View (cartoon, rainbow, N blue to C red):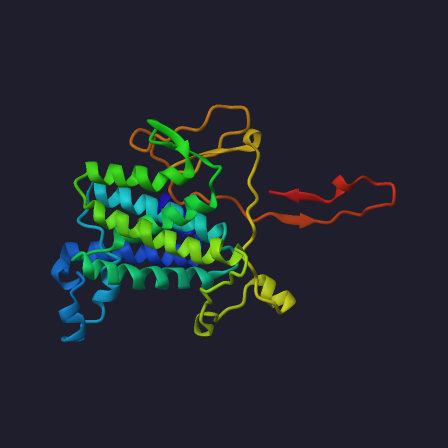
Amino acid sequence: MAGQGLAAGFLQVPTVTRAYTAACVLTTAAVLELLSPFQLYFNPHLVFRKFQVWRLITTFLFFGPLGFGFFFNMLFVFRYCRMLEEGSFRGRKADFVFMFIFGGVLMTLLGFLGSLFFLGQALMAMLVYVWSRRSPHVRVNFFGLLNFQAPFLPWALMGFSMLLGNSVLTDLIGIVVGHIYYFLEDVFPNQPGGKRLLLTPNFLITVPSPQEATTGRPSRRPQLSAPSGRATRAVTAAHGAVSPPGQPEAGLYLLLQPSNPFRRLGPPTTLVPQPVTPSAPLHHLSAQL
């Protein structure tokens, strides 16, 4: 029963997050029995001379052998990939896939210059950075030790990664690529004379979003308004628990209180119209969360 519930919860995860997380886990499982990391790492000579093109993909799928580092990275990949797909990329699956492709190309080039073999951790840093910049007023409680605004989270992760003995250059590449994407997608188009430069190719747009199906127009990324200080919420760094206004920020104790990582964030908000008379108040049009 527990296994069925876990599988059902995983099937409710958005498509891109589910596919990428499953590919990472399966790649690590294959290394335990079938493959060697030497068959997966990025090597330009083997890619372009021996045509081992799969290395362009597997370099983003292997996070090392099973251990604390692997589960730590998987937790953050799953959490922030899902938060992006269910948040600012809701209904924009093609744009989300294009962000992966754009980031992967830049990371491959920078990884070649920096002689890096595996870039999965850089992709994780990019996901965290983009989410943090689009959620600047969210407060993050990092393992119950540090409490700070979301934009500081990528740097805290880089410091924690350094404590684990990982290369800081990998995280730094992810932060740089994430900033380039954020600037081109969110900042430059809103500047005087600016325009959107990152246009999703048509071949990625295979299934229209619900808005496209009903209106015939492509959906746009929702504009995130900055909440007031009183409405600022506290979320955890890797679990996403939210504290009600006026109460202490929720702490994260992953090592002490493990929970189901496949818990849904909640269904999308839907408006349910009610019969409204001329004298009826507006609250008859209620939102069910």
